[in-house]
Length: 163
Image (tube, rainbow, N blue to C red; front, side):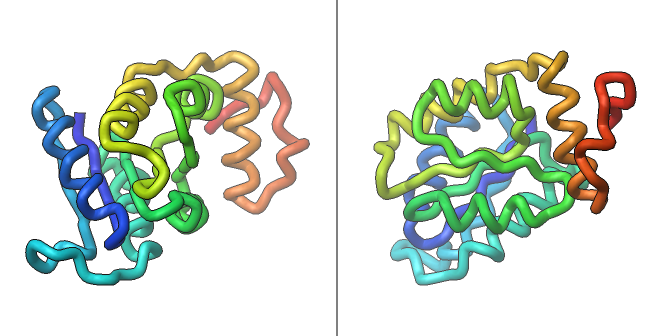
């Protein structure tokens, strides 16, 4: 699986460590680390990384994306502006699993400041191994797609589900 990882200066070290862990599991990883100008991370703007990772996922250049910043909030807001991205801010294995199984999240956003490296790796693994459940959740994801198209989500019914 090809995974795009993006981080700002606060998520720089966590992103590098996560990339190594994912590569060790056999995944192809693309790291878009805006703060990566040498050994010490330089300040950078998280919306640029969120856009890059989100665009890779939305266009199929990556299967999934992971974004890390101080809180994960800014990355999540910015990534969700990319058409086709369903980014979720998660803090533990349960919310990561739910983000995939109920919301079919294709980008995971994490707090580099609040989560330790081992927890980050467990959260990402829980998300990557979870399966989208479909069913009633497919209808809800279709409603998200309707909003993206500027349509009323109430127009999506169980019979008219299409992403």
